[in-house]
Amino acid sequence: MQIGVGNLGGIVASNVFITNQAPLYKVGYGVCLAMILLCGVACTVFYLGLRLENAKRDGGGRDYRYENERADLENMGDDHPEFRYTL
Image 1 (tube, one colour):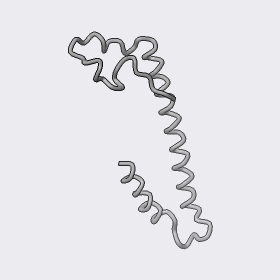
Image 2 (cartoon, one colour):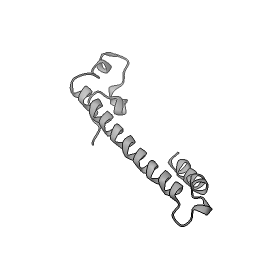
Image 3 (cartoon, rainbow, N blue to C red):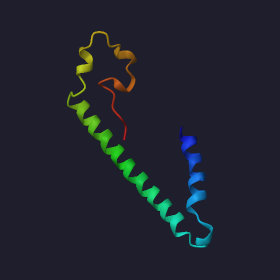
Image 4 (cartoon, rainbow, N blue to C red):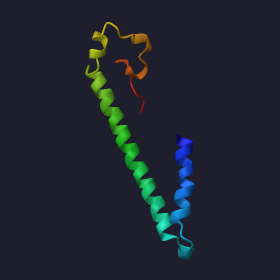
């Protein structure tokens, strides 16, 4: 998926770097700057979300997963209540 989305960058670039705006390409570089800022905001939100999830797990907010007798705790992966995301 990452490669596919990365390849979309070529499509976007061919439409935002307009030839008659050379050599400054204000729209093209503006779009690039906006995407970088969007990425920074998304990474910050993701980081905060992981911290909140770890805090919830530390407070026992995911312990209900132990109650299910059918749950195979050894095979839960990151759903396991003791799993913590590294930041």
